[in-house]
Amino acid sequence: MPDVKFGSSVESIADHYADALVKFQPKGALMLGGYCLGAIVALAMAKNLRARGRKVGPLVVIDGAPENTGIALRRWNPRYWLELARNLPGWFNHADLMRSRTLRSLIWSLSNNASAISRGAIGLRRGEKLGGGYSLDGIMDLSIYQPAHKLFINRLFSALFAYVPKEYSGDVVVYEAKITPLLYLPLIGQTWRKFAPQSEIVGIVGTHISMMREPYVDALANDLRRRIAEFFSVDKS
Image (cartoon, rainbow, N blue to C red; front, top):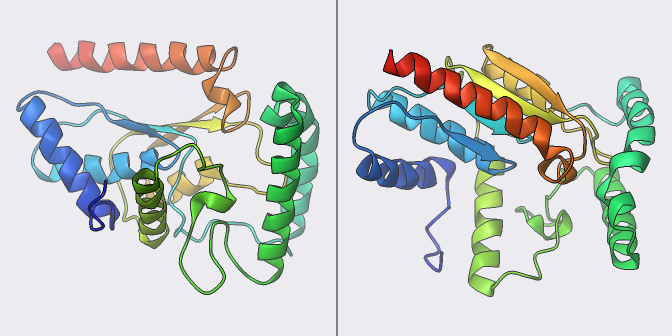
């Protein structure tokens, strides 16, 4: 991570991880997946390994999608505000702010949403910095990470915004959080279906964070366990 070139592009980091995976398992079928930003890296890895002739099972995507697909709804679109209104009851019931009920989470959530509104008003994308580049600091709290790790995270975040996905012909299973952020519509499922027509969308109750915690994660885990077993059972036969 201290290497400033490591993580500078999605393709390079996917090649690094693919090499390590091939070294660990030279033969046999593989099944890849990723959560959030990791889903885009997993996509690039799947393409990399398929190009090497490896059999790659359904790509498992957990609430993450590439940015440069032209899917995002603009705030001037009436559908944008309609979808946000529909999301509001679920956000109050299932959002992490309501689950943790701490003053710190309340302050962070309110300031984060205020920042998102102000950035959008001047034409900036989510995570885009004034003056150029991208930073994850405005989306999540990075204070718990060491400086080298924080630099790597922001470097990879910038690379993900620069990545333009090409059509993917393999199977994809997308686990999409049913509750979106208060003022942001990620449209995860729709995004994947644009360049990966074989995508199957599975809605999971919860937000981007809470879907990976009890009790919501049980539904995801049970479905994923079944799919893994089915793929490797068929592959052996």
